[in-house]
Length: 256
Image (cartoon, rainbow, N blue to C red):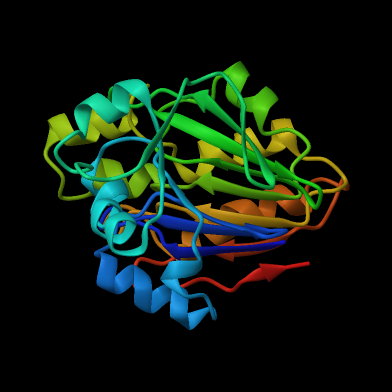
């Protein structure tokens, strides 16, 4: 199993997952050229990617997906409502449409897309299961619902949104309406809220935790790390490796 954040933040997001003979991107929010460069940085050719799964239609999650898919003959896995919202972006692209809440097989993976709260047509988090274990990813969610908690239990690797520091957001430069959107049930999780989610789902076999979608304006990597370091230190279930995604470079590759 190999897991890596190729990019994470408000300007572009992409998660690389490899297990068995399957390589999957969850979102492709950088240009196709930049995604190809970042894949090469971890020793992967874009032509060897087997699928691109789209979680929702915001530009920072789909920017390069259509071009990358067409240039390399990669199918795009996408929910029916999200497909309708992005039909121009994915024209002449092979689509595999799924239904949120219904798991499906894709090569070596069992893919479980589950609904989350965000201001898009049909946003999903995802759990990818293979013989090597479970990988869960949930970003761009305004609240951690009971369903989200249930779905993310039992994962060896987790990717959790840690978007903002609450005090930095309150005192920061964003206009009030944008602050309200970020705080809302259709916005983004703060460091504290994400740590609370982790406390609900932590278990002895969790090996690595990626913090994702950090705001460049309303958060600092050090602030997010401090919150999660304190949270992890307060429990005795496990000691997962803590990695923080970046907008500008690939994360460390988790490999086992």
